Image (cartoon, rainbow, N blue to C red; front, side, top):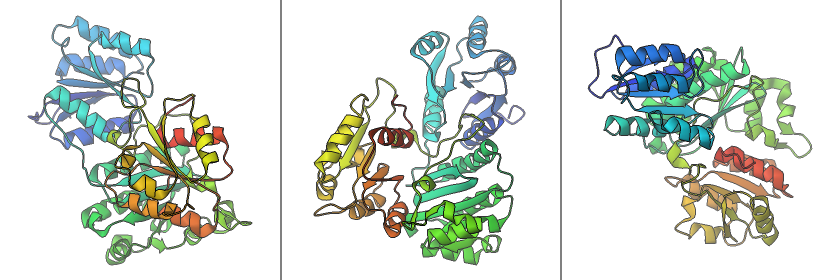
Length: 425
C-alpha cells in the first residue's frame, strides 16, 4: 500500500466500491512487484490521485460521493495528474458512454467480472512492461445451487485461477448469504503432471477457509489417485471426504435431500445441478474463473464468436442455425466426431454443441480428446441419452451443461449465453 517502499515496476491506484475486489486487485498486482493504493469511492480516489500521483489508475465506472466522469474531469484540470492513464471497469458501457469518457483520459476498458490476464495485460501495457498470468492448463469454475457451492476442476491447477477461486468463494458466500457453506469439489479430466503439491495445498486451504474450517462440510468427487493420496497424507485435510459417485457425495452433504438433485424416475442428476442459481441480492459478480484469452470478446470490432455443432442429425443443425440466426454467432457444422476432430480449426471455436451418439467417433471420444487439449472450448452436450452414468461420465470429462433432446431454441440460446458470458437479447 502507500506506506510500503515504492516498487520499481510502477504505482497503481485502484478505485472501486467493492472491498473484496479491491483486496483481490491489490494482492494480484503487488505479487508482480507493483506498488498499489486503493480507494473506496470517487472523492477518496481523486484525493489519492492528487496526493500520490500514480502511474496508472484502475477505476470502476459506478462510484459514489463523486461519479467517475466528475473524477476524470477534475483529474484533467490538475496539471500534475492530467496525463495519468486510466483503466475503467464496468459490467457494461453504452457506446456513447465509451466515446464520452475516452475523451477524459481513459485508455482501456475492462468488463466485469474481472479476468486476471485482461487486467494484467492492460496494466502492463500502460506501465510499459509485460505481466503474464500463469499459463498452466486449468478449468476452474464455482457456482451456488441451493446453498451448496459446486467447484469444478479440470485439466489441472493454475496459480492465478486459484487466487481467483479464493475470492470467488468469498464472493459467493457473500452474494448468497451462506452461513455454513457446504462445498462439493468435482475433479475430473486432470493429468497427474498438472497436480503439483503446492497447488493442491493451496486449493484445499482455500476450500477449508470457505467452509469455516469445517472439513466435514467439504466433499470431493474424484477418482484421481493423486488427489486421494494427497488428502490421506496431509493431516489438515484428512477429514475431507472423497467419493467416486455423485449421489454418494450429495448424500453426504444434504442427507435425505438428495432427491432434490437426483431424478428418482430416471435415476439421473437433475440438469439444474450443473447450473448456478440466481442470487437474490442482485449484486454484480466481481471475479471470473476464466481468462479473457479463453474465449473471444463479444464487443464489436473484435473476433466474432464461433459455435461448432457436432451432430449427425440434420434437424439439429437447422434448429441451432435458427436459434442463433439473429446473433453474431458464426455456426460451423460437423456431422460426426471424426469430422470435428480432424478439422485443424475446431479448437478455435468458442463453444461446442455435442451429440453423444454418432457414427465413426462418438461424443465421449470427442470429450476425451478435448480434455487432453491445451486450450479446449467449453462444451454443451445435446443428447437423447439421459442415463445416470452417461450424464456423470460427461460431467467428469468437463461438460459445462447437459441438455436433453428435443431442444427448445430459446433455452438453447440462453444456455449458450450463460456459458459464453454474452447477452444475445
